[in-house]
Length: 313
Image (cartoon, rainbow, N blue to C red):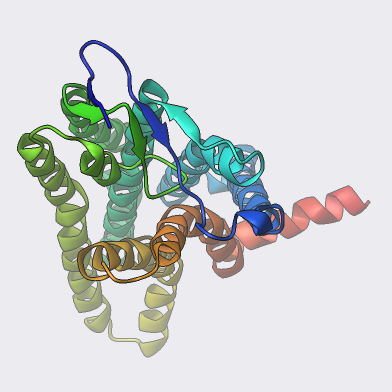
């Protein structure tokens, strides 16, 4: 196979679905479609409810809006190639399109990690400083946090795309998933990938690695604050306000850790296992977050039921 220099031409990449199950793609695509439809509808509903209900114009729900918008972005970023592979059996993707998709997948993933951290900070302030909550988390502060979250993600991922573009590839490269990920693209290069690999690791450490440590610290402080509350009823009430967020954190980090473990230690595992874990990592959080917050957050649940009752009338 010939070697391709990205400075002169553009290589081709072939996405991979579930190897060996191509004849069942029409059947497999149905649950995938349902997952995407539910994710997009659920996150749009969360955004609509918060936007139209003035009583929900509070810091906690502003952060929830950020989470819903991020999940919506993550779903729509992976949707085109997923449907291309499973519905139309079209595996080929251009180098530039692959870079763009990779960029936004990682940007939205880093944003989601940071939003979850911001939501932990919101819960800490709400529980630890309830009387100063509104004074601390003003609209300007929330806007500043949102801009910092987005700016960090955009800045961290951009050099990774630049480094990948300077590498050499085969003229045809087979990827492991039905979407483009940084670690997968690096494996296809035939030139020295040391700088790209090191930078990719630094991005993970400076984003999700740092966020996870701060998340853990936040919950240590939250738990310490809750245990200092004299009333058992108030302690339970304070912890209940964190349940939805804890579920969102577990939904985000558990598949990510599972995918990392399989990539590191599951070399002998079936390729289908790798693809399934990658799909779980990118599809489950956008699906589960609106469901969890709709079920566990009374204010959101009541507004949704209210909207349905209005439609029935």
